[in-house]
Image (cartoon, rainbow, N blue to C red; front, side):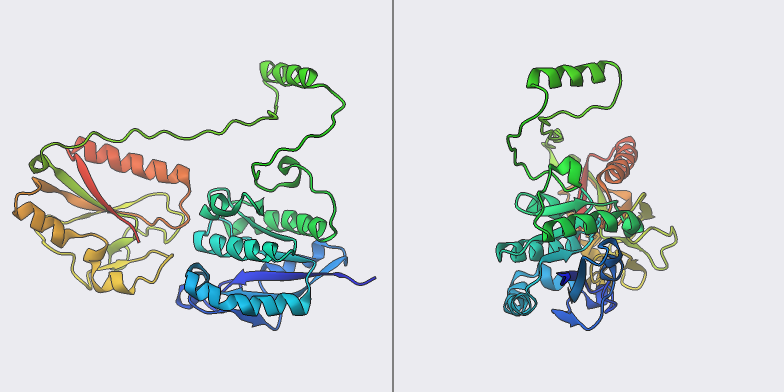
Length: 350
């Protein structure tokens, strides 16, 4: 019996083409299996094989005009291979890679081919594409590849074999917002009493109708008199003194750096650099004021539009930083600034 066929998509990093310097590379049809495509087949017990691996740069796919230019080529590949399943990722918490995986998965799915990708729950692609696509849940970073790949492999094989797909809590994909009626050996009244008893006895339980929760953030009150503004400069663009003396992480940040700007009117080229691992830092390094607009802020200060600037600027890297760590970093910054009498901040990103 012939094996089922899988078409696999990875980015430029897993394809061995390069990192950020190759994020703009176009569609590549690889001659050999690379990245997770190498390890996934062992979970299929010879029922399915990866017959082709394709790759593309994260920036390329996230540029709509460039992305649309490769769709005819993808169509040709689909027509030639006629895959039983299309697989992308895992992307974990890599934002652009996640969006690329989900974007292409969504396109192939619309062509009538079963498709699946996988990533961390905080990846922005989940909210963007989960409604119509299967996205398997993974740990936050690639260190969890050994946990992520078996789940992805199992679900991909099930899709390829056109087997019945169960609810998300059984299969491991993110809930897509659909509800279906099904028969159960217990009535609704019996099930809800069971849930209540488990809850009262501090035992694990799962509601059948999960409620959506939205975090409410109360905005700060507007500052009526701009001349009373004491402002701080903050960036998530990873600007640090040359050599990164505090050894800040290029991604998945857990803290921030603080650097003195007293007595200077501009952030000089050659004295500062961006260590951010998620974008081409050439332009930022050429003029660091693009990340910390000290020159413009000093002008506001001299013209009396604001009262003054805080003595230090804060810097961290936003790429891959999960929500909990982001809250912690922001809280610690806010505590220091509030104690120093700072009442406003200019926050720049990439």
